[in-house]
Image (cartoon, rainbow, N blue to C red; front, side):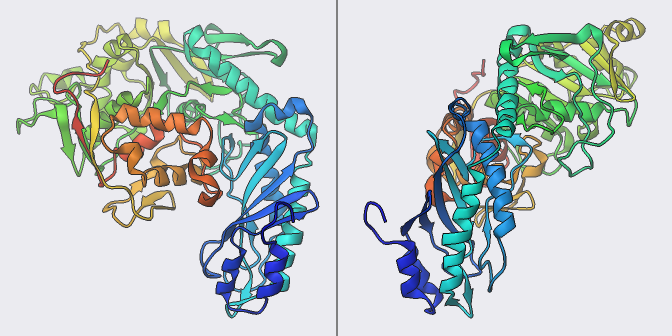
Length: 550
């Protein structure tokens, strides 16, 4: 042992054969095994309780130039350790006995609490099932698990193939560098030539084998020169209003989903490594029955027969139209300036209206995006809308992309000449800013099948409807941040989003600490506010009376 204190091996020798509660003596115990330093951070009270947490630290066998990029290196090491642990993890008793694991990562490069790089050392938080039979300590099995199999897996994980890690680092650098150049080029997204956008199945992460590679239309092709990293061509999605049109099954939604996924950096082999979108993009949709708290939806929903003021609209059971209007305004309020919509998941009366039907329905309670789009563009908000072919949306679009047999075509001029409409235009007003007037922190929050639950939450929040949360660890982070009153109570909604972004710059490990365990992954402030807006334990109020956000 270094620096004194109790060793793991001495504790295990002492408690072998005793009741399971004796494992608590392992708390804070340490051991140096070969080149791996182990520390027991948290001890499970029962073999069927969530596993114990062990911190494992070791020097990484990689060149210094790679270690300068801790985010992609830690991401790679996380995946390497997961595979090594799967090889040695086994069942040896009751409950979680002898299990070794770290959370399953998604196809994106994120900061995670389970793995981080500190200088030239990797720090892992590993779930360990302390073994027992009939709730008695299995000393020999515990020594085998903690002092042999775990450190051996760590030692193999921190000696990866440098060439493979270099691919990871390069992919991350390319995506980060492209994203840094998008706004300067007047773009909100870049879809690289050769990208494979379709997934193998609806719930799969793997690219579809044999899919048609993406090829940008010549008129929208841009080249981004990254110097030593290379030069890349692809379709540049400009600021403003972009409509993705076409018949069913031709790839419209697949393209929009890839653009939405581009707010995160993808791993090599995903197929979408060159699909890069600004971080401030948000996909929005209708959600029948969702909760809404004091959202200014008056630019879109107004003149209700009840006389209700929609500048501070609240409901426990939103319709498709009101939920979409609320989602748009909530996203803008939280800092999103790119909105992605698909008519398949949207109340279409919020996207466009039939000019002939207007002559019959003279009392208008909705103003669709087709009439607000140009004004929203003037306010700095870009729209990417999937539509099979709305003449009203095409008429206001800056770009019309036609998907045919999975290939995009720029048909902007042709579409506008055929339609020849001068659509009605209405003034868009950004939402009034709100504050979190009342907030009851979530008690014992958890995520089950993508649904956020808590002891004091009346209605679960369906986090899987937010496509920007691509792995369970992100949902867990959202859940546990919502248990912290200090981040929410009394702050403006935009302030909450900014505070979360600031916290995430150093990664979730800094936020939750070692005792928080390995379950957390990086999120955006936009994603936290997405959940906050749907909580029954939060209530918003307008800030500053009639003053509106700029």
